[in-house]
Length: 106
Ligand code: FES
Image (tube, rainbow, N blue to C red; front, side, top):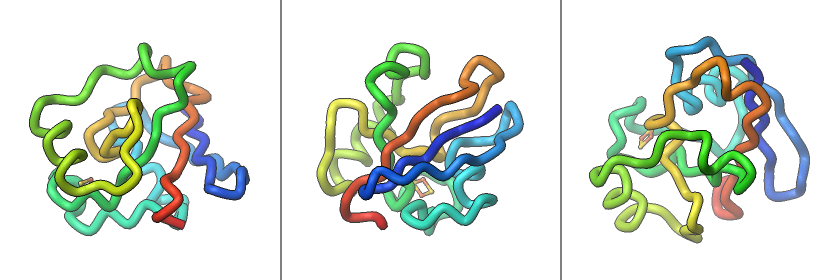
């Protein structure tokens, strides 16, 4: 499953993710700068913030209330499709998913 991370300069970094991994893990494996993931995926650090491309927004399960709260409290430049990428579990039908990185993160 291919996940595309788009940096603030519009450059794409493709990462291969296995179903069951999180989008954050795919970024870390591929050493995508901008996804720091300080807390290792616990949903508490907000350094894995990314924007799900609007075309994909309704194909990715919505955030839990805890995640939404953390995004509001911990992320800069929040947009309607802001997510903590460690809280998105990759499934086969996410092949080609585009996640934009926030300007404050690489
Ligand atoms: Fe810390 Fe996602 S890795 S909130």
